[in-house]
Length: 252
Figure 1 (cartoon, rainbow, N blue to C red):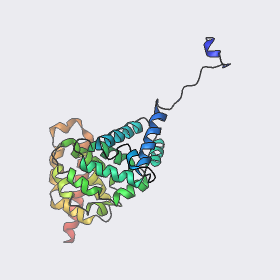
Figure 2: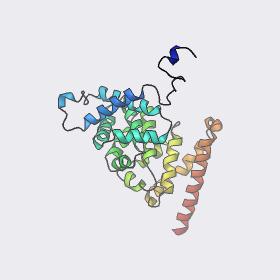
Figure 3: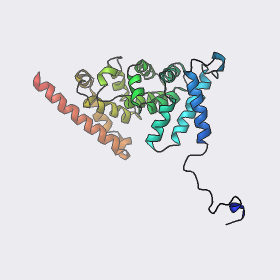
């Protein structure tokens, strides 16, 4: 050991920190900026031009990058809890609605916020489903994938009817199911609908719109020979729908 390392009387080299490099500085900046969004005492000119979507895109991107530095879900949850406010979520939803090229950043962050019960509840009761409805009708595949991914995270068996009844989103999802590269996310949504106790109407819509036949054709895609997870998921969902169809027909 060199004399330099013992200069201050130490007997061991300084321990390495397990925290990601630069976290404190980034954390401090993010927290201060997010708090200025809902700090009523802040003067309008001191809001760091938060109404500017380019500036807000940078903030969202920084938060997403910051969260990626943590592998522990509890740490991610704590960070989100610190920066959370209804005003922040409202601005993110507005950002996703009004930006064409950066809405993926916002959707990704909303996915993260879904791990907070209070944030999930707020989003369930918000107008975000109408935003998703609009994004699913765009021609940009990346935006569609991001929108479906967020929807698959937001949905759970207890809120299927509450959310899907707000907009005629299911027919669009069924149409998109025929599009390659998004089958897995659509499968997650179909899984949730089948698991929901109060989603009879939506399950009948799946049968009426020929989802069984669509899933069967997906299973036969040559491209999926090397993707058994998708084929397995589609096969299982198709079998569940076939059983459901038999039950419904036996009662009619």
